[in-house]
Length: 133
Image (tube, rainbow, N blue to C red):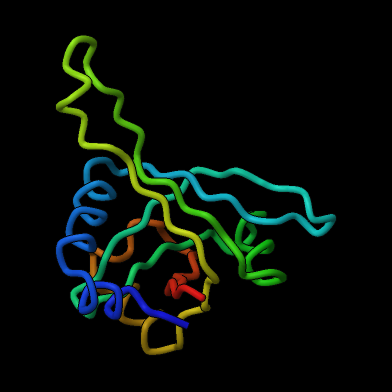
């Protein structure tokens, strides 16, 4: 499994562009798999940590969290910013990431709960560290 910090080390310019595109807006879209295998689309927030991880959270009872605990495969789409009419050549593009979610360890959960910039999901959230495979 490749971690985000590995992508950043192997292709720093590409990783920075993806990060800028994801940081361009707060709300992203995640696709998970329901128990019957059909897709579920949900809104989500995520961020890149100083440690080089991409993290997101889900409320304990949220269906997307249950989906990821059962089947960790996901696709994450950055915020959608439309090109201005007549200025399509200036459009920055969009970014998507697919992989497998890994439930954060206890240390990471505690750190996120006490770090305001990492705990935007509120009480009852379970942060998830993202990896790629």
